[in-house]
Length: 349
Ligand code: NAD
Ligand code: IPM
Ligand code: MN
Image (cartoon, rainbow, N blue to C red; front, side, top):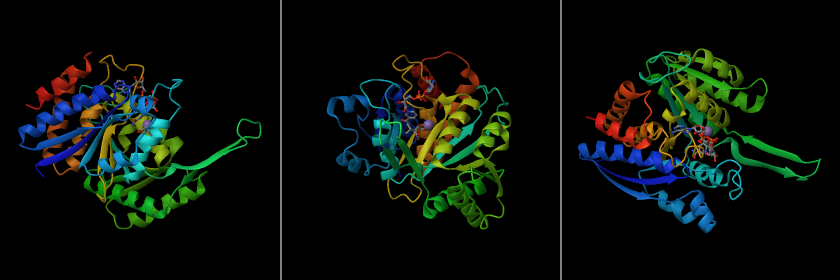
């Protein structure tokens, strides 16, 4: 459609800094194409919580449901900030949105662009996508603490995995692999120890894979996957994995693919029963917040993923091409967050 309604959640730390640049790029690429964008900002995060005691109310969640998509920065206080209990914003804002809006695919591409550096590979050699489960696994919130504070304390987090949840994730990953040049899918799990969830993932990869004979299937235990991600990242095409493994692997993937400041993510509701949400892989980076030192490219590439999801693949490609041109020309220069955003807008041509 040539009209988009976007909810913007800048969040905490560097979130507002990088989202401002993403909005610049979104504005430039859409207005040039005659696409109008109606945006509404939602002030969720640490400040809002400190001021009101609210994380994400049911009313706000319901309002968010009415948008075409959500552009999200990051939430979370500095680890150890005494005013904010660890994880309250992450769980009650970010994870609540992912679960409530059924973002069962957490799509996290890694590409090594010319002009960026990896300790491990040459540009062009890294181009893979992690299809991370988004609504289950150890993130499901099952567990608890018994006899808290004593020597007999028992703390559990129970990983929840359903055939329905894993099958729809795996199907998405196979469909994606089938569209890509190399057509290779690697299941990453740890079924030597996590036998129950591991067996479920393996069974469904085999079952769904039978419908995709053109896709080559491979399996790695997650510990070994970290070896190959650092020694031979070029071997990967599509990785499908559970929520927690995918979280860890995609920070590693960011680090070996030009830096975490370049890595975008889409929280996708592939059935389109609710808006999808697009954000950087990184967090609020309190160590550099407010200094115009954050790289906005991850947020900008997340915006490209959003345009693609909303039926504008040509605009998404224009944004990615502009990022690529800018990185090739200036990738290793010290620039402010706003300078990078302006340069990407200029590179749109
Ligand atoms: P982080 O990703 O915020 O930062 C890790 C390191 O990467 C820091 O040194 C940071 O300066 C650097 N970095 C991150 N983004 C960058 C960018 N765009 N440009 C340049 N450098 C960048 O991870 P953390 O320190 O573990 O977490 C900080 C807070 O963010 C915590 O409260 C955490 O829970 C939260 N968090 C939120 C999200 C989210 O909202 N999606 C994701 C991850 C972490
Ligand atoms: C991410 C983050 C989140 C996650 C946290 C902040 C809940 O690390 O988006 O990668 O673990 O999924
Ligand atoms: Mn993470």
